[in-house]
Amino acid sequence: MSLVIPAATIFTAVLPCLIFEDEDLLVVNKPAGMNTHAPSPYAGEGLYDWLRHREPRWAKLAIMHRLDRETSGVIVFSKSERGNRSLAKQFEERAVKKKYVFLTAGTKKERAFTVKSCLARAGGKYISRPVHAGGIVAETRFRLLSEKSESKRLGESLWEAQPVTGRTHQIRVQAAENGIPVLGDVLYSGRDAARVFLHSAEMTIRHPATMEEMTFRAEPNFGGDPTWELRKALIDFQKNNAWRMIHGAADRNPGWYVDRLGDFLFSQRTSELANRQRSELLALQQRCKCKGIYHKNLVRDLRRKAPSDATAMLISGDAAPDHFVVLENGLQFELSFQEGYSVGLFLDQRDNRRRVLDGYIGLDFPLYSSGPAEVLNTFAYACAFSACAAKAGARVTSLDLSRKYLAWGKRNFEINQLGPKQHDFIFGDVFDWLPRLTKKDRRFDVILLDPPTFSQSKEFGAFRAEKGYGKLVELAMPLLKPDGVIFCSSNAARWKPEDFLSQIKGAIEKSKRRIVQQEYFPQPPDFPISRDEPAYLKTAWLRVR
Image (cartoon, rainbow, N blue to C red):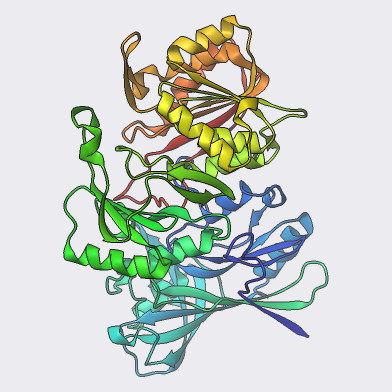
């Protein structure tokens, strides 16, 4: 008996991309544009990395097979030792049955054929050689499904590929050498397109515990917008209505950034909007059922501009009220388009705020110890991190050099039914108050450091993250309890992660403290990282003894 499990909606309250989960297996419909795993220590998280740091029950995930970054569809992870052993054996014995589908602008007379060749690495790609030439054998069965595909307007045909073996780039290489390169796969002679149109449509395995045959399916959506499909797969829309929808060059739109903020779209660009972008914004407005669209031109040097120069302007639909509320990780936050430089919430910290809210950083890395935690949030801005910590049961001290933002933070507490009077809101300079809190013998279980890249203080002068971060950490160390956790973050784009971490670790060592645990995270997946749009956000969680 074979159990067929399509990509269902049963798990949408957790993550939309989940297909199946039990104690041994986690099956996911991977979106295009995300690696299976991080390609390097400081690159963007792959799907595997992102999942295992998200839920405690996923902490011991194991990769059993891989899909290329631009390939979407069914991918199976193991959750248990039993699952590891069983799936490894099934893959080794070629007992796993896989079906892929792909679009091609190429043509071929045969409607079904089998390719058996040897693949060899040639620089950054693979080439196919005859079997008699020797090497690793790859075998794939191809079958034409339709000459009138979902994307008929582009003139492609739809093919199925069943790999008998599982070699890197196997389908892509063998399809290209037979005149039907995958659409978008420019590495292997495919025509340029919005993505590589290759999808893992079906996988059949035997369950590690029962040995029952199970088939997992996920229908391709080749007609969808890849940028939207990525967000739709990874963001829980029941708990979030604020995320980045277009992230510059990584989403094939250099210099243009669009956020969904509740009932409104917020567009930012380094130059005036083109007609194509205005049309795309209107399409996004209709898709998200947003009331209005705001836009502002990105200002490169904010120090030389007045806040009014960076204010967003309504370009379509209804105007937003002076203050409106969005939902993030199930909490509510007040935003405003009338405050100049920022609207009140930095969306690229959403996953880190979730970690504060859930108290879970990663495997064997809980954020809070037993009992109520004391949390210090420096450079608190509108106190979004503080609200998450308070919701988790911590007593929070929020420190910022703006009475207006602290008042904003108190409103964020109130709309989440958190009594601000039970917490401290301190107005003042962080560099002044850290020593003062030390003298007051205050100690904290968690300290959050997320300073601006550049700031200017009358008393303490200029602060530049690349040069002054170490001093900031040194000032924080006396306030951190033994085995406490410090969170360090910077969005200084040109600062290398290695140098960022080196400065933090140097400051901790100088304070005669020792790091016993650490995790590093870049920006979340709705801020995708590419060669044309490199990572800018650097965040580290460190437990210090």
